[in-house]
Image 1 (cartoon, rainbow, N blue to C red):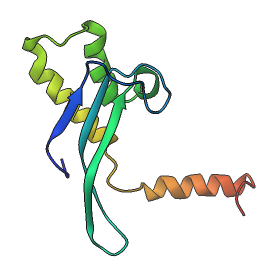
Image 2 (cartoon, rainbow, N blue to C red; image 1 turned 90 degrees about the horizontal axis):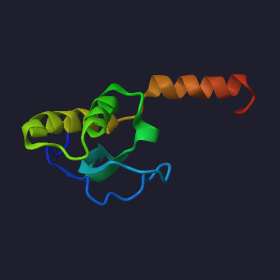
Image 3 (spheres, helix red, strand yellow; image 1 turned 30 degrees about the vertical axis):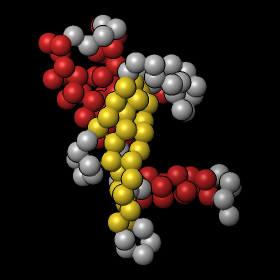
Length: 117
């Protein structure tokens, strides 16, 4: 991981998904940093919810959702596997920088459709 190695998570009494308001299965909090316009490093944290409605369809999320589908609680024999899947999922939601190729493609599409000048 590029930021803080610590990941805090909760899966008891998880608030609703911040994106859709549906049931979130897991909320994680992890270190997040970026370089601001003056070139200084800004450090903080970010939270992400694992939501079956919003996250299914991506391999790291699907792998983690599969564990929740099998059992309501993670048995002690599967804690290492659970930890590895959480780390993989967090890495998939961590976005250290904007994907400029995707951004330009979306901008071009909006310009082509007359939505942007």
